[in-house]
Amino acid sequence: MNVLKNGLVLGAIVSIALVSGCASIINSKTQKVNITTSNGSKIVANVDGKTVQAPGIVGLDRSRVEKIITTSDANCAPQTIAPSSVDPIFFGNILIGGLLGSTTDYSTEKMWKYDNTLIISCK
Image 1: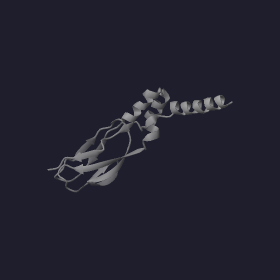
Image 2: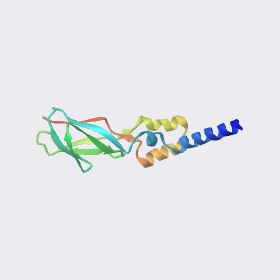
Image 3: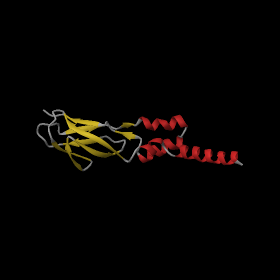
Image 4: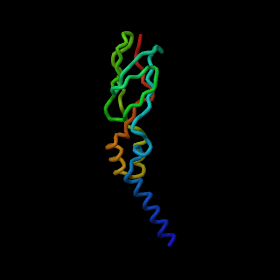
């Protein structure tokens, strides 16, 4: 009887692992990113419709699309690109054989990440 019960528990755990993505479990919808300037000056910037003080931390919604940080400060670049990349956590799906988990991570966009620190170039 214990063998059957243990088998059911193990089967449930494996099923959950296969249908849920590693990144979807570990990553939140947003990623905290430190935005700073190359010269240390304080500026106001905009990203995803949010105003942020730089240096400062902003929560970026994870997406496969790069983010564009803009500023109207005359001493700084008007735009800074924050490219997205695949979070290494996503590859946990391959290790455990979770094809469905990969699909989950892709559909929730939690498989993407940005650099932890983004630097706006300033004079």
